[in-house]
Amino acid sequence: FSVRSGYPGVMAPRGDPSYLTGGTGDWMAKLELPLFGGQLRLLGHGSRNEIDAAAIADVVDVTPDAVPRNTFDWDGRSYGLAWLRADADGAVRVQAWSAAAGADVMWSLAEGSADLATRRRDEGLSLSVERLSDRSRTVGGVRIERSHTAYTVGFTDVQGPSYRQSSHTPVATGFFEHGHSFGDFRFEAASAVSGAAGAVHAGPRLRTRWSP
Image 1 (cartoon, rainbow, N blue to C red):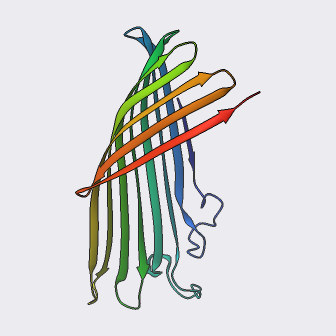
Image 2 (cartoon, rainbow, N blue to C red):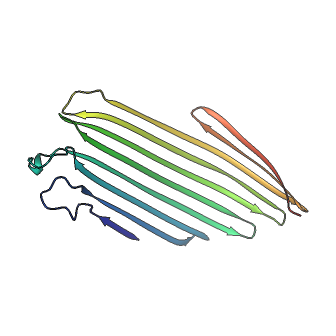
């Protein structure tokens, strides 16, 4: 587990609004342990950044509290889980993940401010089974994913148009792959079928390799 933090305005003279202010920080955590005859791995990471700057160039005759500021901040975090149980005959894998990020901007105007924000989140779960033999390898599994995106534009203390758009995209995929060796030749066949937004998409693949 680790944590870091920073402050870009630490060297700024006190009471001088022309300098950048804000803060930065991130963290990371990792854990591994045996579970149900396999190995479980957990990983998490997050970061956050905040920066604000004077919205006008001439701040000499303006009191620090009266200087309008433009602010920018963004953050993100990711979590992942993986469980693997493997032996000479094959393996079983389970994976899950979640990642999110966001950004906010406040841009000072002559009156009020313009505010912009965006958000994105992706989540997923995957399960696969692998079987091995002396000459062949077979893998099959399913994967479920979901993505959410949102954008917002608005104004504070001033009249202006507002805008908001968001979307949700769930996707389900089944996949299969088989490879077999015949002497110096290796034949592989694979296919994935995905369903999203009421449509189904297939992606077959065939490949032959020769290794003399």
